[in-house]
Length: 222
Image (cartoon, rainbow, N blue to C red; front, side):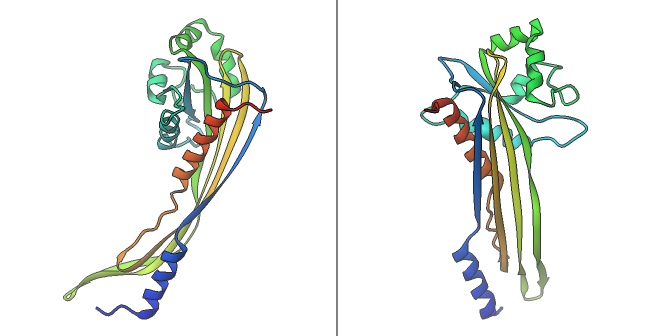
């Protein structure tokens, strides 16, 4: 099978340009002090509600694992372990829709006791999702007597928007919010075989948000 010169040139240009993503982080604080002392822990929770969208489980897991790694690791309670232990208060049908409603739950003695058992200091409440915003092109594949292969070109754009609200259990108050917005374009040229070149928008948003959350606790404004 002969490969058209134009197709080779197209793949070369895509490989040179590569897939890319950009992230913008915004942060504001409602308190000047936000620190984790000793073996205090945090829990990272996603928006859960039966009548609307839900923040992806894999994104919440990614943020939690990222915070629990590195030299300045933070003790993060896995979301599933926390939700199961708090049944039924954080199930899909009963979970608070806003971080500020956590204050009401914390005033219930049995709930407050469980928070203390976890040595829980902060809730990180994440609301958002990753969406496909545009796509174009196509890739077709066929099999014949002489073999098979694919030909074509496709691209798609994804956008991730997440907001992390940080709520202080001891102060029963919101400490601040962090917003992460990541946009990226992925490509898939195909000459005999498809070559996906992924922007990994959600993964980049996760890492950027986790890094900023870590900074939120480790650095205080001057």
